Image 1 (cartoon, rainbow, N blue to C red):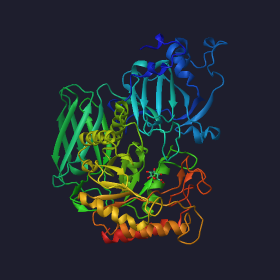
Image 2: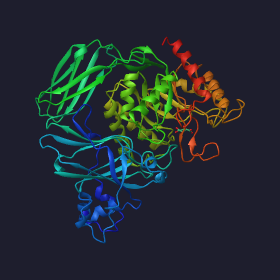
Image 3: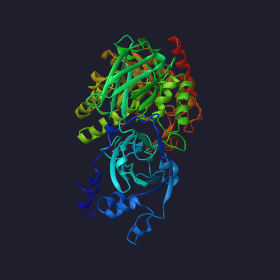
Length: 595
Ligand code: GCU
């Protein structure tokens, strides 16, 4: 359906922008490539009635306005276009934090960014790190594509649409919808906007799209494999170079632009105690090349044990949202580093990045700092499992995440869901996602954070059985966690307690049985860990949660809009007593594992 056929009041105006949908297939690796950042101040206008997309769907003149937003000649009394009335906003950023008056705004907003012409010859890909939730894009008034998903990157070849002067227009729609991921309800704040970097990436005509370099599991820690996807012609050579391993191997591109090679090597293995990274280069004969720093390690399960490089490991973890004071999801590299270093200060060797893909920096920094990661897509609580379009969206978010981070040694677990109801639609939906993850990456473990119930039909699909439980907070006594875990242990798989925690107001003190006091939270953890660590097949724990975080449906006088289960307050500074409690338990555990 083309834009011109729609009437002004057609409720299906968004049909005009259904395709092309930007998916994982169009993703290219951008690390180390020549690029132009489009970060900075963008023209901005909230659009609560989604006027811009509706107009653009049926009004050709409007598309011209999107190409020449300041062209007075195009403006006449009828046009409601905000020319001359533009505001500006920082990209990357969340409009909720950039504009206090928009803190609780959920809806659409129009972003405009102009940039000069680019030298002809190479191809130029527009790459957006993330924008919550749906992004509809025009370049110079031409609709170029749409992306769904709030936390994963997308990109598109814009070469055909470039001019001497360019205007990029993006309508970002962050409304919670029943057919989105997450759907209508989630226990975190729905920040809106373009909150990760936007750039133009320059690549040669013949270029490398994606690489996947890893140690193959079960090969005695000595077999490396590289798969490369390119736009190159059949017969072109690809070279893998790892100078420190004296590796310089070649492969030939096939008719689908793919090339692969395997080799034997003795890499120094990556682990939290020894986060060793190798400089690697993948190059095409015609000149395109990608550089990266990659660690080689093997993670696998053996019965109910979790093995890293063949040795049992206990995941001393914590959960963390990507939310930073004054920035929301728009994490800076320093924010992410501080989060990871604070986890390490808690004596962690593992972080569960909840409940959606965090910034790409998280895995790159974790590679360097030696912290193992759980990464997750926001199939959270109730989503429309019976809706095939929702499954397609989930699969695409999972593929975008895996293609982005599969060269990161720190990432060991792909999580496909959190606390989902045990319906038939849900199980087949999640089985599809588990298959999708394994097809894309057979070197990592697949899991999902399950509700604390035995006999979940999804258990057979899980490499690691992860359970969220709140004994001693939402229900029962802390000690009861043991019964649940003993029951779950019968599945014979390694288990992870992926969430457990209790609310506590930083600075509120009292007796250990007075809920919401620091003493109560610390005691909660002592009692929980006493139960959990008594179960041999428990291979990890990740308390809920490192920092207090915004949660709109938490409004009682203690919470005041925050989930207060953090070990640290929402200022990311005020450490609660439980921080020390957990740290001592983890330091002791590390000692037991000789770390
Ligand atoms: C759930 C959920 C979290 C939530 C937590 C809580 O388990 O996974 O997102 O914040 O419980 O209730 O605090």
